[in-house]
Length: 195
Image (cartoon, rainbow, N blue to C red; front, side):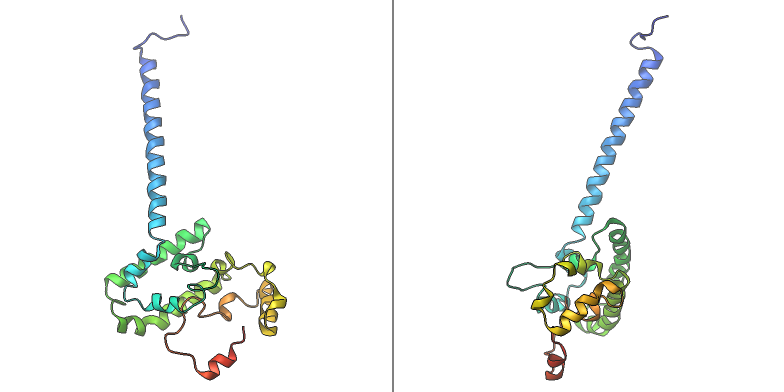
């Protein structure tokens, strides 16, 4: 009995089918990964986010912050702050965002008036997310260990030094870092913030 099979033997055809199935599976896997990544990227753009937050209020608020206009020309987009960068938290946030898209389709925030009425609830939910993650998206850009604390105000220096203790997180002081109030701050509000 020969260790080599004749072409066309039953065992040879089985191997060919197996190789075709493996190649097809690998190709489908690659297509799936590319499609998945493309979808993640597309749903992480400012244009996508503003598709539901289409009345411009959050974008106008963002334009009033240092995260939009600064001496360095570095701009943080919607997903830089609202979607964590690690895979599992990113997927969790994408799933949660489906609820927000559903709310938009139902007309919960489809006008400026409805958006402004619903804004306190949305803000509270976002702040809770930031606190639950210890402001992970803030920390993906801002590294306390690299901050020049001596160049900061005494209050900022004290609070930033406490960040590692778990007692506070970024949004406890910088609640409006990404979306400033559209109304001008009062003199009292201006004086109470010395960062």
